[in-house]
Length: 485
Image (cartoon, rainbow, N blue to C red):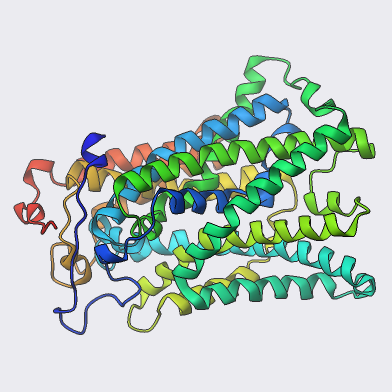
């Protein structure tokens, strides 16, 4: 770990390469002078992404499935500590070489084959973009209805609010990554304060944390608990399995490995755990105050009578959803689509493509119930992303010993050309990881493979990729030729 912590930054200038380079200014390595994100900025990024309505409601699905409050919170915390490991490992290459995720994927998959993992990641991001935009749109609809009561009579109000929030996202897409840094940096403290204020209100009005916190687990045996816990943990890992792949999109702007490692450790697991607990505690208080459990914060705010409090709280929800959506669900697919056609698609165009697909996916259907959300959506896509993470980490740390020739990542006929731009061995390893994880969907006796989809896919693809690739000592010596600054 100390070798990672002290790794020097590498700067590569692509200006002297031919015009047909496989890249554009958005995909090019960041210069050392452009890596300005310190520990606070990285931590603020994760706080901004973690504080959102889906996180607030995350424990609700686990409690509805039979867990008590501490089992649900512990599952969420454990899942986030687990996913922090590949998060930090994959971030290393972004900070060291200044490259985004789709460019890093060229090392194991080939300069053209990288489009396979990039597009898989992009499709998932489009789905999440749609979900967050739908949720944010409902908050805007409630806000407008409070400020202008006649709006509630407008049948197309929810759809119009959805499009308004969609347009807000597009604004930050057009203004690029630096606007995202600004948004996350200033919103993080505000969101934490608002969450704690909501927690204080619940404790005060509810006379302490009541029914939900005293509710026992519904599982009669240990076996019943583990049967639910295992896929639930996989779902929690799957929640951020997306960012564990494309974290280089952000870590490429980090000042140092120390900044990205500490920033992520400070910002991710604690914030996810705290905000999930706030959701549980506040919902517990609603049983006492309103006579029923209200998990949806937008519905909860409609019960308030002070318009100032309602407006301020809804603004906080809108900002929380916006920060999550822009950072988590726009940056990656924007770069991934740009990687497909670097000369025709830049960051802005890639982001706009994401925004359009996010509507086409019809996100409201993904939020139909907790089982569809956790066991269908989260676990389902983790079966694709786990194998990609396994291959990336095996290739970077075991096969290539964290040594990359950055210029060749942008060129045909270079070190990462493999066979016509595709590394068939990596694609086979990916396919094996995905298929084995999905066997559990069709073979009941092997359902544990799907329950552990991310873990199974990661392990299978990691091992297969290692054995089908050259042994580490046989890797081309040119990989050791890096120019350090």
